[in-house]
Length: 288
Image 1 (cartoon, rainbow, N blue to C red):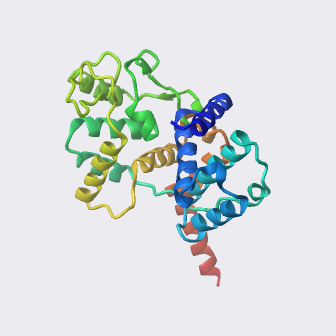
Image 2 (image 1 turned 180 degrees about the vertical axis):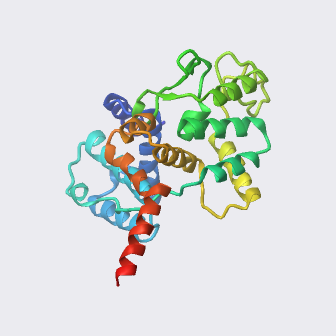
Image 3 (image 1 turned 90 degrees about the vertical axis):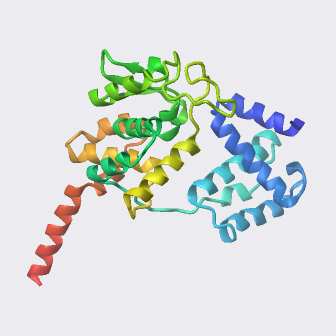
């Protein structure tokens, strides 16, 4: 590790940013250095300006990727190198107003039934039934299951925030049945890893990529034409709760959203909202 990289990581740690954010920010700076084939502290402001134009116009980064690149590089130059450049006041990630893909309850069940290996089926079922992010689902620990209160303790979620979400009885029974197949004292979803360690003694959770691959295979087998991802299950769960009459403020807490504006997007995705819109449109057309 170079002294410059070490110093940046120390600055990130002092700011209290999570390990995932640290990795993303240092990767953004590394990609910048690789683009110009030189140490990032030797890059000029004009070169930086041209790089931001490159990732926008040539690479066509998404909003999420652009945000990480801008924030990571800005942190490095302003906090690690103490350079206050005007370019950072100008550059912004592109705005997007995309609605997430939503699966019906029937589609969720059909896709889950196409997942062959129990460990992936149980993991993805838990992610859907508890509204978890992929990272949160694969890293569930045995003490996180509060069967007395029928709640699931989600630790170190996005923004390093903990939260509780309801634990359905059927999900609890499914988790118990799966855990009995390996009896790992800590992890719900352990993996053998490259060394084929016993699941009972494993200290490593299953990988994100393996769960994502299992979902892709199930989508293909179910012949679903929707571009669904693991996060789609979380979006679908929130929409289904809203359709069932659950208060939006409560859904916000379950999802771990800081702002109610983030959660309010689901009000546009419910079947009820679509039905009301269709009725209104038909009335307008009938009056023409």
